[in-house]
Image (cartoon, rainbow, N blue to C red):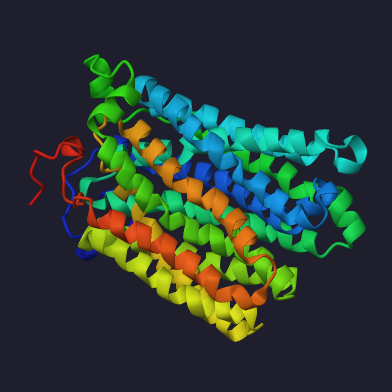
Length: 453
């Protein structure tokens, strides 16, 4: 009996070849380790995003006055400047020496920098040094995040059964969604504290709590082994000396394609980070209520993200992803209209449809979709750099939206147009890619190879 992650065999489009118990065990272990790493990365991401939207303007940037929120979102965005550098560094070592060790280092840097943020003195205590230290830690977060998702995607793809690569890969994104859920659960009771307690010590608790998730993820990740396909490249001593050079020489177009595809994820950032600030400042909605609503979105996404991965195995990466991007563009308008007019029924209904279902289905395709565009020799580097090119829009979209819209609820349609524009970029990028869901693992990245029948 197969020991793979269970899924009804009648629903599998191509029955996988029989796998040894060891292969099945290593595949499950890769999924669990990647799930936990994604949870930690985006737990850290969302607690910072929530703090940037609700707290940091008063704790670290009070001197900016009315522009405090803008400065706070700028600190959120600087991590995305460091992400491409992290993608190059972690991608180089991941393609040259192996996925496992690099993923452990990425995890350690992320966890340590997040914990230190919770220990930083505020502006009243040390003046301008406080935001400087905050930005330094945020840059370290970005550096580590630049290599995390790509490494996980490469590892899971190379361990997964051939016909279930999308489904297995989707659990990386489920881990990311779980990070959002955990962060929201932690942040909700914190947000109800009186302002004096919230701004002095309350906001620090979510950052300190990340140490628990870090310890669990580290213990699991230590037991990983490299995939067979990567081990073959390493044993043959055919791993490129400088993976990034080979990547940019022979696969630059796919890097740009992944960059365009990754812009899709900025639509989520606009809702989870800018949307939270817009709802609580421009529309005057309760911060606690909005956190509960965002939690509902992500709980739904936990269900629909693996469904997206499964659908991409059955129908292909391109059609599922492109349909989801179009759906996000359309549903952004009723969602932002609901926020601007304080219509909770519309906020919840449109938001669950947009973020909990449609976005989640498209997001479930991305680990396999992105990493399948590259050969094993440069997969880590290509996926990492491509993702971070696109994620620059995620980091700075809240800042740009704040600069354009400010706290004017009447400008809700401008925000919806921004979200739709981001989704449109992803759709155009998807049209330029080849369908890879039925290409054999060893043939990925080689356009001369035929697809599996």
